[in-house]
Image (cartoon, rainbow, N blue to C red; front, side, top):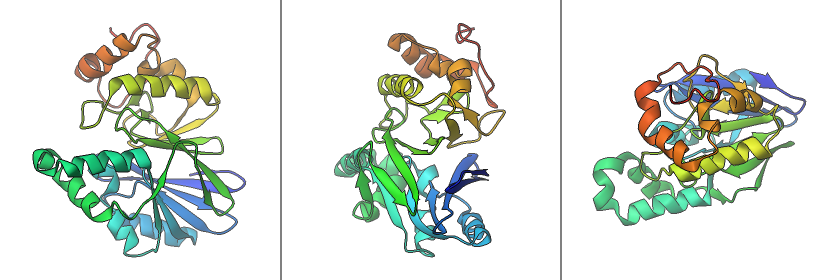
Length: 256
């Protein structure tokens, strides 16, 4: 759990892919937002009851199955508003337009969005979501998917599959783009405060959270000034030479 004057962030590790599902609690109103509900939703609902909050919002960092498969279970229990970047909804609209060609790869996501694309509140990067007295800023962080989002709350950043502790999300899945990922990570390093605390979408590292300063120093994906070298490392080198749990890598040792 992390806390501030206005809010707390609670993390649950759920499912076979070590997903982190987050519950953001606004203290003033006891409203809560769940980020990327998936897998064992009863544990999320139990946490909400334990904390005495009502889930009024669902925030999606992106729309891959392992981050969305609990949405309907949450909506069965709470009348919550679903939030998604417009670019991600547009991405899945394109998928659905080519449904037959994509079916063998994307049937779970396509089935879900075929039913739910009319449900979300769609956002642009820079939008604010007001959770009671807690302001949540939506950042557009493409690379893992075209409409991937991070959520900036106070000094905290919920990063989904954009940035892991000492890692980053894959760019070889449908919609991934390593060139955009390189730009996203450079922008994060340059534009966000060093003390920003990172809360990733998966528990893939030797620690569950970190600061942006620590990531700039020890995350190999944040070491590349050259876009071409980043693309080579992300697409061809990293997964063959480095495994979980991730630890820090000194700058200059990425390809060793």
